[in-house]
Image (cartoon, rainbow, N blue to C red; front, side, top):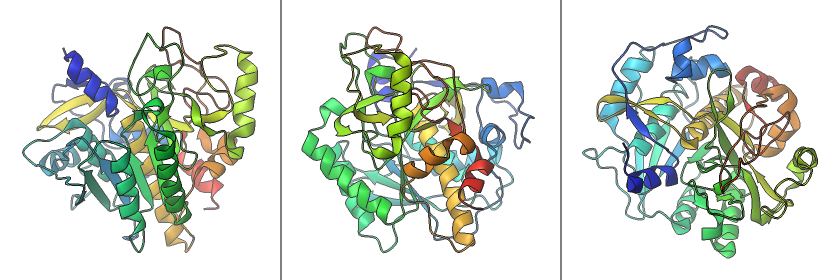
Amino acid sequence: MVSAALASFLFLIGLQCAITLPTAELPQQLAKRQIPPTCNGQVTPACIQALYGVPSSRAKDAKNTIVVAGFLNEFANKADLAIFLRDMRPDLTPAPTFTEMFIDGGRNDQNVPSIEGNLGVQYTVGLASGVPVTYYSVGRNDATGLLNLAHALLQQAEPPSVLVITHTFDESGIAPNEANNLCNAFMQLTARGTSIITASGDGGVAGAVPKETCTAFVPTFPSTCPYVTSVGGTRGVAEAGATHSTGGFSNIFQRPQYQAAAVSSYLQSISGQYQGRFSPMGRAIPDVSAQSQDIVIVHKGALVQVDGTSASALIFGSVIALLNDELITHGKPKLGFLNPLLYSKANTALNDITTGNNPGCGTNGFSARQGWDPVTGLGTPNYYHLKASIGL
């Protein structure tokens, strides 16, 4: 049993639980429509490849990079990554690893691996095959740390093609001026070709962590920044919205034009349900979703299972990194700011998820439906349909 304090910590950083699994032979590479039943309870890179059509071939361009942001002493362990790749991606030979960067006193202590850090590198290095991954360890766990990270990346001659942020705050805990400053920095990064992917949170409509006593629903930041792509969670091979998947409406940022039609359609469909509990004209989250339950990683040398939208953000970020590699190979620019593309191509490029709900604040939360919804967004990635949508 996880202690209450540890459970709260894991929720805050985007993970709900960690359960040790017996060592077992797990699927390595699967064709679409050949997803074994084990993927309903043990989600591996092979399951993700089969579900979303993610290629296993190595990326080609070394300039196409992913940055994974680490906070709260979230240490990513290279020995655990090596075991993970040995068991889950033996086709990646020689086995890749990740580089490290530190700001605000960050470090990466190899003697104290963390679940969040291990998840971060294992589901980028192990899924975005061959794309260089840099793990940025930030010594702070607040909006200032996020802003310092954004400024550090803006100072680079060529910022990363993908930035994945799994750290989530209740929006109410961030001052509006801080949120706007950080969102402006994110806007600058997207203008220079960086796709920013964030976890929506793990508290359903209650925000970053589960709560039952809240009277108003709780949106999360940085997901509510209109220049990031917020990723909610799904579960199971048939894919339903995960109950922990945070979704809702910002109290700081207005709804951007790119999502106006999709969100208006949803609001009309619920006919005033939960009126007064959220800001209907606010920026709506999540934008998309991906698998977030029963995710298998290696931690301290053993297989463990974790839940949370941290996993979904990393999965979606890896998909975007692989698409960027194909764009660069064809002499085309990186995707950068994703959301206008996603909302315009959702009907053909994403798997619409129509079941599931995200309870919290003493309610059943929102329900998934056809089209955009505040549980699973526009849906989960379909690699080859996304590839076609960008002209490849």
